[in-house]
Image 1 (cartoon, one colour):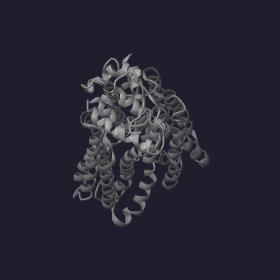
Image 2 (image 1 turned 180 degrees about the vertical axis):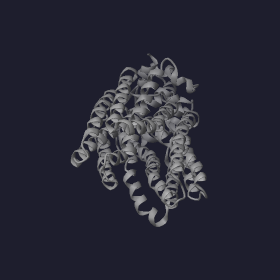
Image 3 (image 1 turned 120 degrees about the vertical axis):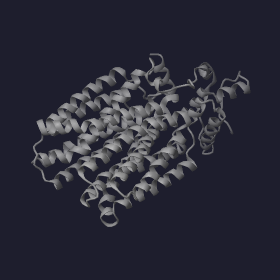
Image 4 (image 1 turned 135 degrees about the vertical axis):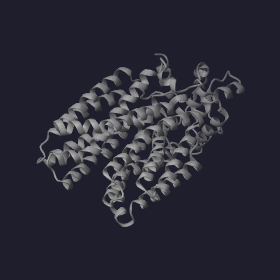
Length: 478
């Protein structure tokens, strides 16, 4: 059996072919594929990029510490290094969003990954800290584009009923990098120097780029949305045949239903303003709010926890040790998400997590410093909830919430708004911490999270179990 069978026997073969390769036909054929090897291959291809990018993010602190210790940098220059990285993330997310919607998911991801790989390699040979800062900014552009590009595009390849599971697995792959990053900084930097870290990550990223270039197919949905239906059809046919060759029978698709939707194909002309059109503005606000909340809490927990402990009288070694135990909650939370992501509503899950975070994080900040077990156990719970929420927001909900023609623009914009939390929050946290103490930090954060949860509740569209086209139709009808 070379091609799948469909309902619609009264249609001519020419009419069937026209419907089959239309945008609705391509989307329906993708959605009816059972979860299998083809989807896992795509997920791991995106996962390689996400892993490399996350690995780089988690080695920055160790590199800055050595630069400061060696007298190659100063505290002020380290701060500029961190700030320029965040600005690069923001610009990269916006630029890659445009590239992905204009030239394709594959080309955008290849560009971002290559930019990151080349700049990381060159950074290893920077003659001065000022030059390294410039290189880091360009690395940030690559990083900022690759992450939303991967998270946003995966949803276009995966079936509705397991889309959350695959997105969760992608997030889990990326979050295996923190312990490896910590290990690299401990083992490699003292012996070979910080340059070896950058060279190693650059070479790993180059390998990921080569594998992407060789094996990643372009998104059939994107191709069909651009009128390149023959190319989209070839990719979907290849996926269908891979299942048929395994003896897996594919469900039929109703031609009559498809015939009614062939006139509802995506608008081919779209731009940034489309995110703020009457039909999309609420969803844009909801997803941006979700990512702002994510970054606010991730940066607070990962960057400020050791400092908070030290300011409350704990020695540095103990503070780092407790932080490490707490962060073990991250993979646990993501693992739970991979089980439950497709079993509960996305929007309700986001809202519940934000309320739980607001409560548990504040309770955690009130625990006395001599109660080590409580600090670690409640902190573990906080991190588990946080990363359950983070991957649900940036990996699952993000990619589902925007129409195909502006999906990566939307993903990039929401990530850029989220990055603002990383740029703004350090100043607010430093002020609150010095003036009122740790409880004030988490009380303020909790209030912000509750406001953002309410915004998501009022503006967000539920996406679980729906095809991307159903979600698009829902936002279009509002």
